[in-house]
Image (cartoon, rainbow over all chains, first blue to last red; front, side, top):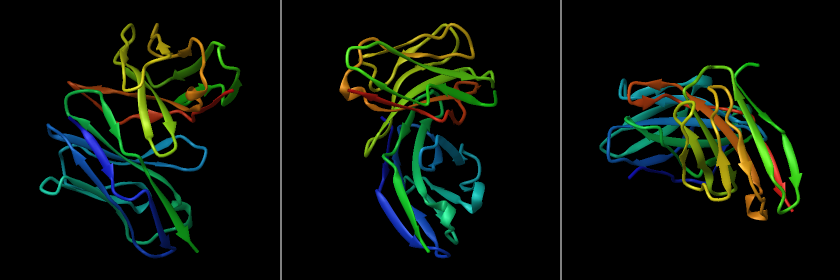
Length: 113
Length: 115
């Protein structure tokens, strides 16, 4: 069975400080993993994806994530938060054979000026 | 059209009424999906379609039906709306690579309120 746990429902950081959004997954097979961002009253936009190539994945807007199989984690990071990063972030897992995508419950990121 | 469009943007509906949410994509993606988003629950899959002419049930299919007559369109119908179907509905699509499916692209959503 596949599932995703986002460890923090809310994260608050000051502008210019690092961002860490945590995600752990459970998958019976080699997974593909994604991070999406959702700004208020908008649809979801892909930030980055891991599909069994390099374990450190770089995405848009300075975000990156590292796939750690031993820890079953795929945490999202950014060195320096910007006000425009305030949004809801979703971690998603998908098995490599199939079209079922499993969403975490989301992490709301607040950036304090 | 560029990407995925959904209509209407929002709707208030009386309980018991029938409603169809429309979704159209112009990317020629094989697969399409309907999700509902509720606070604290993330996105939950309602129905999906791997290719035109086929559909499947997701995690929360009860009270909803879909059809996939062609590649571009994937309407979601609530036959008799109930207040628990108040939610934000997102349509998504993805391409297929071999046995697996690539990342999903999402529409802007439809906010539905059932009174």
